[in-house]
Amino acid sequence: MHASRAKHGPIMRSPCKGAALPTVGLGLALVFLGGAGGKFTCGWLGGRLGVLWTVVLTEGGTAAAFFLLLALPLTPALAVLPLLGIMLNGTSSVLYGTVSLSMASRQKQAGRPGWSPPELLKV
Image (cartoon, rainbow, N blue to C red; front, side):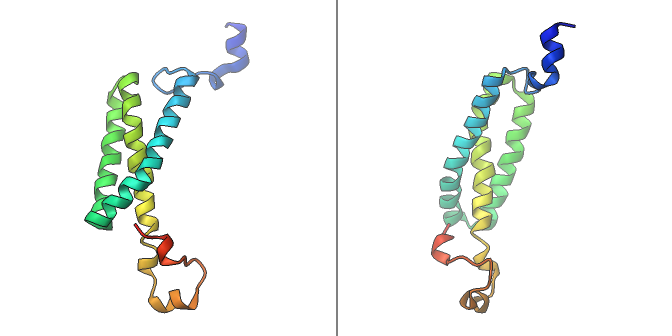
């Protein structure tokens, strides 16, 4: 066994379709950039379609993106990563916005722990 291979072992090898570590970093950056846009996009979509349909669409899109990532080679898979980020972070933002909807108005007025002002949760 080569000395550097024994020293670093599996830590330096990427399980991500044989990508080098800088490519893995690029992939993570693409997911995070998509996620930043997903918060805005899904907030807008939630206001148009409602929470339920937005969550159904984004969860279906997340599943489709994962299947695409499994099937595609590395370079096209990188192009799918921002879409995955949009779906993942967008869904969570829409769901966070429903917290105030699930509480009774008496709880909101009493200032129970875990409540945030509705204007901060607008979707």
